[in-house]
Length: 542
Ligand code: N01
Image (cartoon, rainbow, N blue to C red; front, side, top):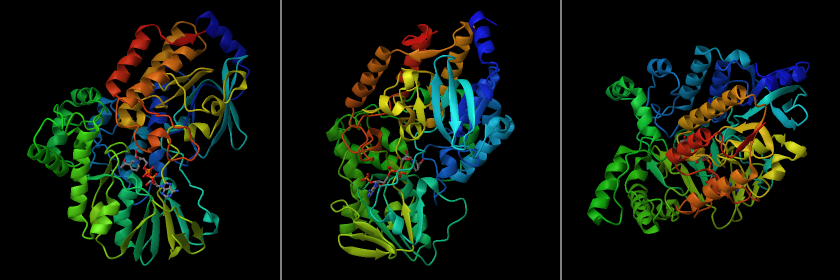
């Protein structure tokens, strides 16, 4: 063992609850990080607030919860044996099936023994004297580790808007991002749901089937394309499994690491009839393929408007009441907010037991003990569902009191918006890694390959440190500043900065408006590789 490592081991050997690495979160990211670090021979402990594995997929158990990336792609690729033996049943996996998969992976690789459940991390602080992190739990337990790895997820801190009177509501209150494990029976009840994002789009049709009446309170409409979920075609499964590696490699070179077929023509270079045919074909196919109909949908407003108008025409065709169809029709850029995939979403508004309430012009005034009030009108409700989304990307990180060098808190550092190098490392916070942090493709990519790429990168970095006898690593301020500018510059060349999306933090009052994800998975991976090939350019190691 090299000298510095030995001295470091000696200095820290008397510390109790001592680990090489602590990983916070036991979703897809935390689980694979544990696997990789164990492979390197590190002593690792994972802390998870929930009582079970799954992260986002543990908490989001609302009716209809399902992934919007196809199951053959939304899965780990690190083990050929695993990807061959696991059998998905549907085109898009449901939340229970994803949870079964995560549990299967944990059992197969015996990962559970290093995970401590029911443990919420309160604080993580860097001790410069010994180059270690102290991690403190809500119950007072403290541990030390050389590396602290945040696998806290991008959409795991639910957004609970401060509705006046919310605490006075006497009915049942639910948030889609923190849904109870037991089945909720909505039959015979009057339900209100606030929000019309992906979670609401998935749950509204199913709640409507059970409820006596469902009131949907919509602030902004979203574009919803059909998911066209169906059982997995055994032939397609067979073809993919015959050469899964190439399938993954091909997808990883696509802009979002998702198997979208991109048309190489502009929407404005074809005739109206050709455009219509292309949109119709993709509408029939279902899924995110719609976004690949033309090559300029997310960079040219006029091109985008042709796709937006196509979806609005579909809404008018499906929804019988023209006034309701108009309220459901978005007029912002299609794809600026995450496109929603739905099953019978617009059809649901033809049901006599569903009423759409437009709250765009006048916000919900007050939640009262038996319902809520909007525009002076009271809506009596037995249950209220908040489908109000998340404090995305930074929320879960900032919920933990993270303190770096000189006691600087991450909250202070990110006061004007998140700053990070590659979305992996933060200047002033040595040996702290963020898996799919702000500044990385994360939510604008297929999360599974993004997670695997980050975990592999972090593991390789730790291996490099050990080989070169380094005990700490952090990005330079200059590299970080340059990366944040680059992330913004790339985003500004698209239409994705033109609406009030959670990518910009616009859904949380007071949150700095900074475009958080990096657009373009392949370019990002190339950049990460280049950093490594240049001796971890932009990082300083000691
Ligand atoms: O949350 P959202 P989500 N008064 O933020 C409304 C992923 N996901 O949980 O648009 C009234 O999209 C808000 O209105 P507005 C996916 O990445 C994936 O649905 O801000 N309304 C909006 O309608 C997704 O994008 C899957 O005007 C208020 C809604 O609440 C992300 O998670 C499934 C309000 C929130 O929509 C988040 O989706 C589910 C207020 N005060 C989620 N505050 C799949 O894989 C908020 N709203 C398919």
